Structure formats: structure tokens, C-alpha cells
Length: 362
Image 1 (tube, rainbow, N blue to C red):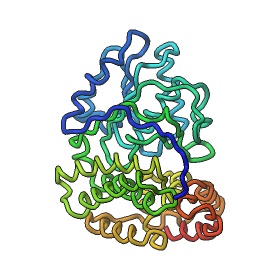
Image 2: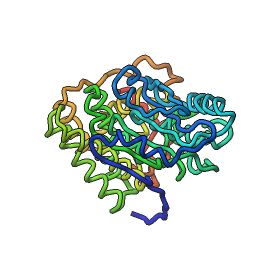
Image 3: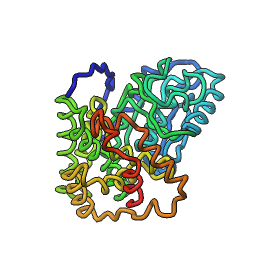
């Protein structure tokens, strides 16, 4: 690897263990002040009438917003949540923002925590180091594991012109609570698709030109834990929940100092044009990349068979030429991912017609 200096921030505090969610109020106590809203909880609306929703420690001066994540997080919704929060507190930012849910909810929480202290639309901050003001204290509590959003300095959003992350030091969560009990009841296929995001992070990190000893250490262990969770342990295994939760966290750390690759570039195209959820989009794209990641795809297909998951087929059928062009341009434009996958001369290997053929086969 050619040395490149990168001085990244990490998660400030994290707790792991069954039942640690019940300490959330204790974690938030030192952050509370007497001005405006205190804590804003963004909670996946799937928990609205569930026990977990009732366990959220909402106090008198707090706000709870139920978040629908049927589609990928959008800049439009980030701006809407930000405006709603500031309107309720006469423009005063809250003391903290907490995201309770999968990667989409955590991305919303990280983005909202930044936008309450930065003017304009979140769309103008899609890119690297564009945020100017630190956000408020942010907490991530995953109820699905695989995206690594809880350990990532990126919050990925679909904007009016592109799907791209807000990426900077300020995006990194200040506090993470990893409670394996919270992912135990996740729907089987959703658990698999989200978990595969983590596995693919590891494959792409290890196979690319930006890899290094630091990122390899996290990726290798993350991949090992994914293999245990999806090939060795049963779907109701308590150990599988713990292994998958840690695999997700380590996978997020791995790609922070490495990068994602060809699969994520393709999946961004699927998500931007077809609104395909990120984990599922990754699975659909990865299944077509056996020539790029032969061993990784072989093991992935074993996991699909072991877990009894049926991947959708023909998702790109019937697209108009304009939609296909937009999908190709979205994927091709993610230069940093292709650079990691194939090196500086990636344009000699990644032709737009090749991308078009891959999408047609999905």
C-alpha cells in the first residue's frame, strides 16, 4: 500500500453487553441542560407499539420522533426533522440526538445532530469535510447489525442529485450502546441482508488497494464472526447475535481506514434509481461480482443457501434507457470506491458498458 496520512476520529464511548440499553438514561444524564429541548430520540417506527418503544427513556423536555425507513434516508427528511426540532425549541439545538434502529435510523440521527448546528440543506454537505460546525452529542443504538453506521464517520443520504455520504470527523457518534438483546427478534431476511453489508465491507476492504494492517485486522475478525453467525450458528443462537453485533462494529472500523469497493458502487446505483434498500442492494450486486471477488462471492452464496434466503431477480428489468444511464453514471461516479477496488488506473478496467451489463443481469 502507498502510505497516505489520514487522521480519523473514533467513537468516544461505547458499551457492549446484554441489557446495556437500560443504562441509556444514565449515559444521557450529564448531557442534559435547562435550555430548549433536551434529548431528541429518533426511533424506528417498527417499535411504535412494541416493548422497546416503551423502554425509550423519554423525559418531560425530550422529544421522540418515529422514523419510517421503508426507503433509504434522504436529505429531504433530514432537513424536515431538523426544522421540526428547531421549531419546537425556538431555534435552540437540543443537548443530544439519539438514533435507535438500524443503519438508516442511525444515519438520520447523525445527520440531524449535525444539521441543527449548520445552516442550509443537508444536500450541500454530501461529500468530504464540508461540515463546518460541530454537531450536538449523538448516540447510536443499533437494533439491526451489519451496516457499521454505529462506528462510521459517514452518514449516507439520498439527495436530489446523488446518493452520497456526509463524511467528516463531526459525524462520528459520541456514544454507542451495543446490546445484543435488541437484534434478537429482527426478521430473518432483513437480518441477513443487513448482516451481509458487514460481510461485504470485510471482503471489499481486504481485496482493495487501500488496505493496510490496521484495516485488515478489523476486516479479518469481522469476516470470521460473519462466517460463524451465518454458516455455523443457528438463527436463534444468542452467540450469533453477539458475534454479528461485534462484526458490524469492526466492519465499520475497517472501511473507515480502508474503503468499500465495486459492490457498494453498484448498490448505490440501485438505491438511487430504484430506491432498493442498501443491504438488499448490496446482496443483489455482490451476487454478480464473482469475477471481482471470487472467494467472497462463493462464501456469500453458501450463506444464502444456509440461511434459506431467495435473492430477487430481474430488478433492473423494464428500466427506461434514461434510468439505466442514471444508474450507470451514479455507480461510475464513485471514484474513490473504484480506486480502492482496482487502483489509480481503474478507468482502464471499469467501462460503462460493463456496468450496464452487470445491472442488466441483476
